[in-house]
Length: 235
Image 1 (cartoon, rainbow, N blue to C red):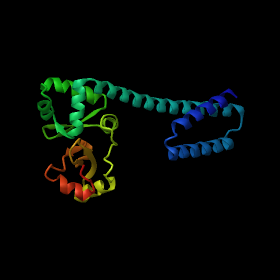
Image 2 (image 1 turned 30 degrees about the horizontal axis):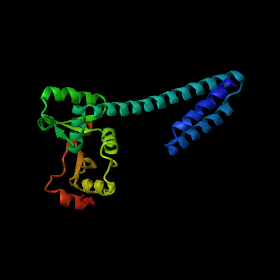
Image 3 (image 1 turned 120 degrees about the vertical axis):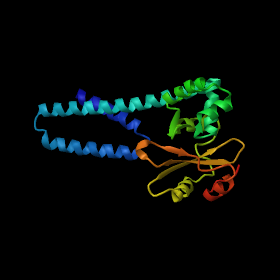
Image 4 (image 1 turned 90 degrees about the horizontal axis):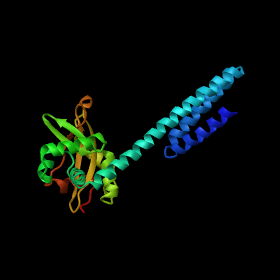
C-alpha cells in the first residue's frame, strides 16, 4: 500500500510538470499502461510484485529528479540574466550584442570603449552562464546571444516578443532555404533594433560537425529589399 501511495503521488507530480507538453505526456501514459498490462501477465507472486513496484518507484523518482533539475536550471538562468542586467558594464555588453548579432570582439571593445582583456573576462562569464555563444570562422570569433538570453532581453528590456510581430517565420525560412546550397542548412531569425528597420540575420551551417558558422546575410543598404522579400514591415 505504501509503494502504491508513493507511486501515485509521484505520478501526480510528473503530470503537473508535463502540463505544457500534452503530447509527450500522452505517450508516457500509454507506455505506462503497456508496462502495467505486461506486468499483470508476467508477475505471478507477491515477491515479483514487490520487485516491480520498487523498479517503478525508482524510475519515477529518477524522472522527477530530471524534471526538477531542468526547472532549477531555468530558474538559475533567469537569476543570472537578472544579475547581469543589473550590472552597468554587463548590461551594455548584452544590449550591444543584442542589437549587433554575430559581432566581433574588437568591435564590441571599440564601441564600448573597453580594453580587450577586460571584455574577454566579462564575455567568458556570459558564455559560462549560457547567455552568449561564440562561433569561429577562420581566425575570427563572433559573439551572439543565446536564444534564451535574446528572448529574455526582448521580453524584459525591449518589451517585445522574440520575433517582430510583423515577421512570418515561414517566409524567413523559405527565403534563406531557397538561397542555401543543397548541403547546407539555414536557421534564420529577425532582430529588431530600436528606432531602425528590422535587420535579418542567418546562421549558415556548412560543416555540421564543426559547429554553426554565422554569416550576416544582409547589409543596411539591402534591408529594404530584404524586408520586402520576406514580409517584414519597416518600423
